[in-house]
Length: 92
Image 1: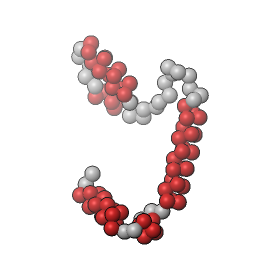
Image 2: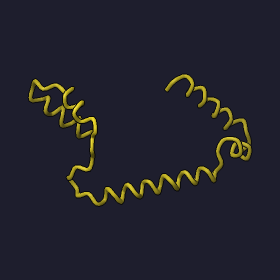
Image 3: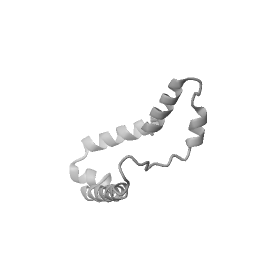
Image 4: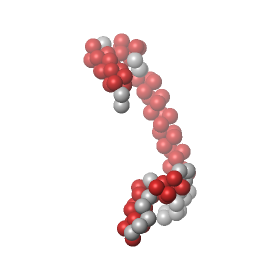
């Protein structure tokens, strides 16, 4: 993060502790808005689970668009380099 984000976060902390709840909700974020965001996130999560539930276990379900750049940047001199590549791509 940068200094601007730290400053903004400290400003919000000050607002949270120095305003009564009704004023904070009116000025910064209301409980209704938080509930709406939770609903949107839950809907996105459910949609992702629906899609991922159709993929058989053990089958690759990921596309890495920068695969070629990563592959070319990995070392290729020793047998252990294959282990490194396998672990690296496994984490991705």
